[in-house]
Amino acid sequence: MNPVIIVYANWIKKNRYVFNADSRGYRVLLLDEKTTHEKLAKSVLDDYGLNELRHQIQLSYMFSNKALKTMEHDTPPVYVSNTQQFARVYDYDLWCRYQ
Picture 1 (cartoon, rainbow, N blue to C red):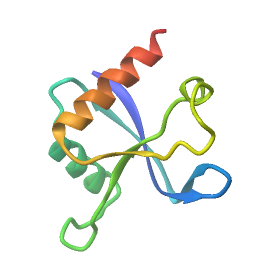
Picture 2: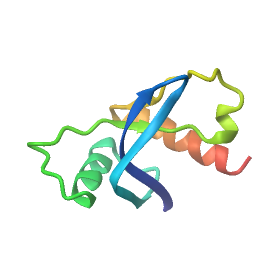
Picture 3: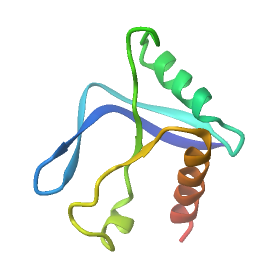
Picture 4: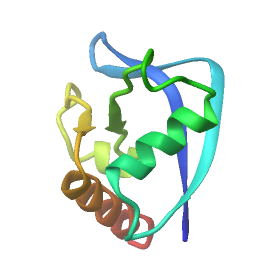
């Protein structure tokens, strides 16, 4: 199991995309390669006390500062909308941690 930090926020485009966190703060989830998009979304809703019928969440990935140094300054966020995409982002994140 690997800790993943989640943040209740939205993206704002200025000179570059910035992650605008609100007062709900951060949470840490423990995820592994068996975690599905649906399980992750439910965990986020539960951790923030949100009702899935009233709140539609959109999961996205924030690149590490190390990765961003090799990208254009206005690289948009990566949205994760299914289990296959989540698995790729999860694998990429683990790879970046150990480089």
